[in-house]
Amino acid sequence: MHANRNITRINRQSTGGYLVRITRKGKLRSKYFADVDGGKRKALQEARLYRDELESKMRGYSSKQLAKKERADNTSGYPGVRKATEADPRWPSNPCYNYWIAQWSPSKGVRRTRRFSVEKYGEEEAFRLAVQARKRGVASME
Image 1 (cartoon, rainbow, N blue to C red):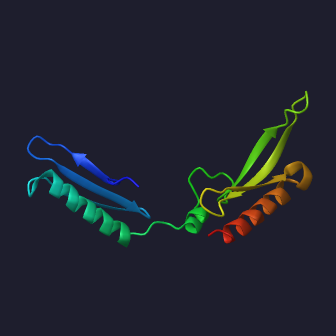
Image 2 (image 1 turned 135 degrees about the vertical axis):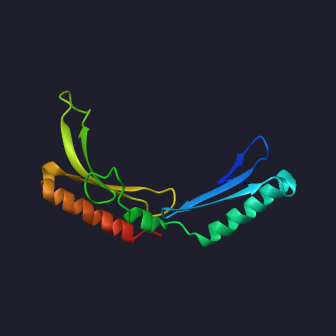
Image 3 (image 1 turned 45 degrees about the vertical axis):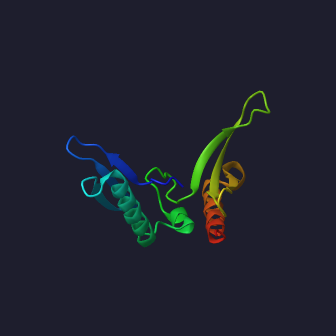
C-alpha cells in the first residue's frame, strides 16, 4: 500500500499541511495537520499516525458484505445478477442469445460466472437459477 494513502498535501500561502480523509460505510472522517507546529515532517508523521488509528477503528465492508450490497446501476434487482445478450460468431447469421448471468468472487483475484439461457429455461426460470447460483456462490466466499 502507498505510504501516504488517504493523505493529501495542502499548500497555502501562509502555511501548508496535510489533510487526512477516510470514508468507511458512508461515514467521512477528516482532520488537518498544519506545518506550523514542527514543520512538514512532523505534520506528515502525525497525519500518518492519525490515519493508521482511524483505519484500525473504522472497518470497511467485508467481501461478503460488499457482494450483498446493491449498487445504483443494478437493473436486475439482485446484486451480482445481470441479463446479457451475446452473439454467436460461429455462424454466418450471427444469432443472438439471451442469458441471465450470476457472478461472484470466492476468493481474492478469482471470479466465478454461471450463465443460464433464456431460450433453454425461459425468462423466469433462468433468472431464478441465476439468483440461486449467486446465493450459493456468495455463501461459499471467504
